[in-house]
Length: 165
Image (cartoon, rainbow, N blue to C red):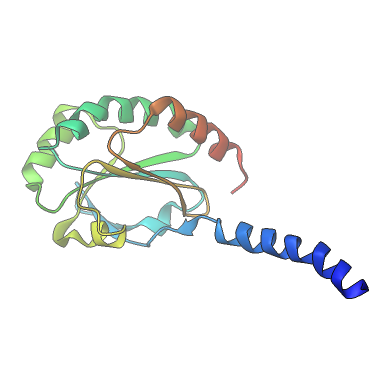
């Protein structure tokens, strides 16, 4: 009788603990990317910051339409420890990417994904824009297919930036 009572009390706690453990964000892949100035960087070098990784292309109308909002988001949150990495898809000609970044004054890191290794590391990204939001521990907390709801993204950024590293 006592064993049944203990089992009834403990089982739900164990189930909740298990489910909580399963719902923890997954670690982002530690991909490397080449910035427009030719530097190769590892995503893990940004640990300690909240990071938005945006896969995009100059030929993607939604990507181009969301860029001003990404710039605005970066400018608003960068002083608080936020970083954006816009990774151009491997099929996007590097000169197009350079010209777009320069013409539009992109203030964040713009990278080329030669060979598509970064896109492969992030769940084989094929559709643009696809964006991943990482917390300060380098875990994926949100994935966006298409343009994010920027009001909700900003609220989530406020929350993530307020958390300890």
